[in-house]
Image (cartoon, rainbow, N blue to C red; front, top):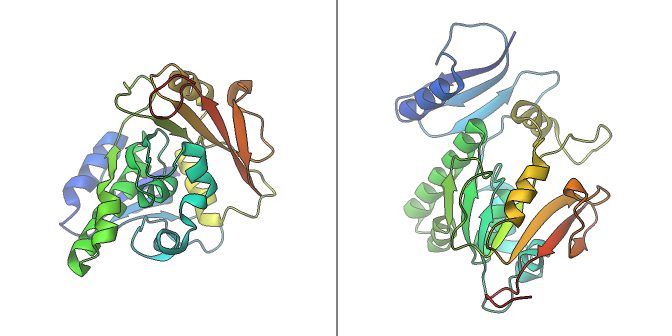
Length: 261
């Protein structure tokens, strides 16, 4: 039994499908056999299918429909906890490096609030899904004349790179949301996302991610954590903002705006 199969059902995204198959060292459109996951490229959309037990919806990234679009329009603006965590205040919008971009949900919220985001995602699978979501979102915005969405997505620059060892320049805040083993009794994570978690794997080097971030010339590091989890690497934050199910640990290095804390 193999873990992943990559298939392409159209010509438009063929080059991308071939590139990721080569990166993962698997054959594109391999002959039928049982796989736990299928990464599917058609002429427009990239989808990740899980073939585990029970009905599971495919995972795809969309910024112009569904939850992301709703939160952009009605999400609470600067009053959201994530906005306070990264230091959005008045007209000040920090430049943020999302060093564990995943499927881009938090980065999209921050871009919706006016921040410029650099997104780093080292998983080729997550990167393919996120890149496709950004491209489809921009295409939709252009076709429908949605200038607001177009401006939001234009503030998101995606890189397929590992943040550990990558230089950080012209950034105010580093944002980390490491992937940890899901709690078995958690009802907050649906079957599809649990499957995605299984395929992508945990960020076992979260300590290194934070250590690298703390060594950079930035004003603060923000780490998203489950509410009752210990700090990453037992490194005590300067302070934390706590919600119902999660919290943000803030490591304040300098006052936002450039002067020393």
